Image (cartoon, rainbow, N blue to C red; front, side, top):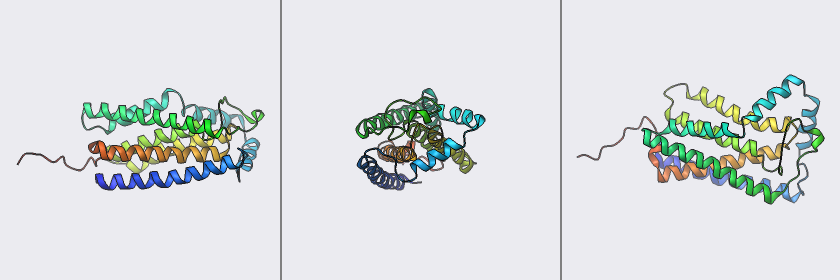
Length: 226
């Protein structure tokens, strides 16, 4: 994809997801943090379908959405994206910065929304802080997005399958937060929207300020020689 088209797509996506996220956030706060349509039903379904094996798998998946794992994956995404060792290191730093700043924005929104979590008696994993938007969901979605971009830019073949695997992981982390009883589904939806918005803003900035990082790997580097 050409740089201008990449910037236009990223900018449009950022604007659209920002509007959707703001609307959701206003709805959540307007209801005083109470569950929205479908939230309670999905939580009750989760409570009724918790065999030990499923809970263990959900915990294992949810743990990959926090801590050092997302930062290792973001670093790998950046290193893969760069054309040279130097550009790879710069891209890795940019990916880590994108993830860290996205988490900071999420924390600020969470503090402002101050939405209570579901009842603690429904939890089957550790959780802390307010509920909206989900931190694990936002972090995993940002990381999955960075990995997907790296795959689309650099993978010579099998891109669709690899991207599908990465995005499935990112979505699964969010769903486990509802299944484990520590978030409402609207918290997870908010995390997805915020992550896509922030990732799109970062992609827009990269396409404008460091275009070769996100240029098509198949596009030849033009020489300045006559």
